Image: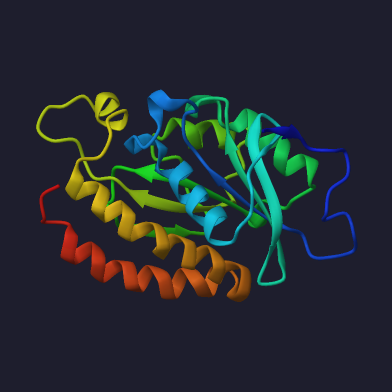
Length: 218
């Protein structure tokens, strides 16, 4: 059962700013486990691995919070539909008075082979409508981190929009299943080592995976 978050929060004490991890996707069974929802899958994997329930509603998002490696963490899955994600993410960051360098947005990326991940400290929207909305509600500020989750390109002349709303085939889902614990480990490393050092080490590892997977069919 879902409940709305109270007006107080665990991070109001004189502690470090919490990290906000946001997975982008579309709500509802219709979109569950589609390519466009791998951001939701990654947040779910992180929450389950750390036993953090996401059973509250806050700023138009399914929401959870807790401590991981002694660091305060906020988890969110906006329920606004992908193209309006910023209507949730912007108010969440404002509510907790977070600097944007404490925000990590997790989203699907067609520019990476399926199952390949990248952690970036900032960047553009790469024509991703969810990211466009987030940047808009951050007043054009792009200084937030992203965990890009590769889903590959649509085959042949397939409409990219139709591709995004399809579920993965067995091969592609296997790659995503393998990538989820890698992403969870990266997010935990961000909490313990910081974003810069984690990105340097993690992206080097993923570079070799990229080379290995980029020519394989899905």
